[in-house]
Image 1 (cartoon, rainbow, N blue to C red):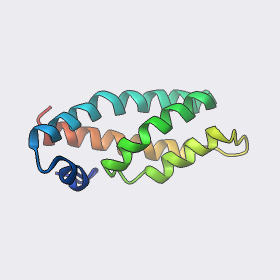
Image 2 (cartoon, rainbow, N blue to C red; image 1 turned 120 degrees about the vertical axis):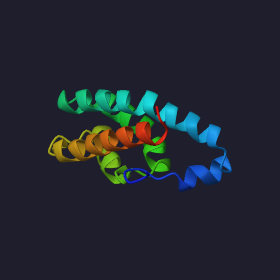
Image 3 (cartoon, rainbow, N blue to C red; image 1 turned 90 degrees about the vertical axis):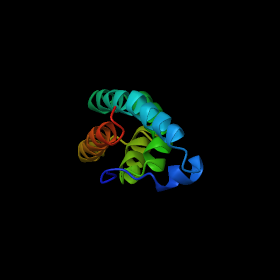
Image 4 (cartoon, rainbow, N blue to C red; image 1 turned 180 degrees about the vertical axis):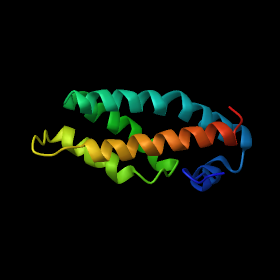
Length: 113
C-alpha cells in the first residue's frame, strides 16, 4: 500500500475519515487517467494550449497524492505556457504517465475499486 502514492496529507485533511478517503480515491481514478490521456495527446500533437490546460488542472491532485512527478508535470505546463519550441517533453511525459499508471493500479487494489 502507498508505494506509488501517499495519503498522509489527505488523511490529515480528512481527519482519517475513511469514507472521504475512498471518495478521493474514486475521484482520482475517474479524472487523472483520463486527463493523462488528454495530456499525452496534447504533447504528442504539440497542442500547447491543451497541454497547458490539462497539466495545470492535474497539478493539485498529483501534488496531494504525492506521485513524485509534480516537477515533471510543471515542466510540461511551462513548456506549453511559454511555447518552448526547442524543448522535447517526451521524457517528462513518459515519467508522468508511468507514475499515474502505477498509482492508478495501486489505488484500485488498495481501495478494492
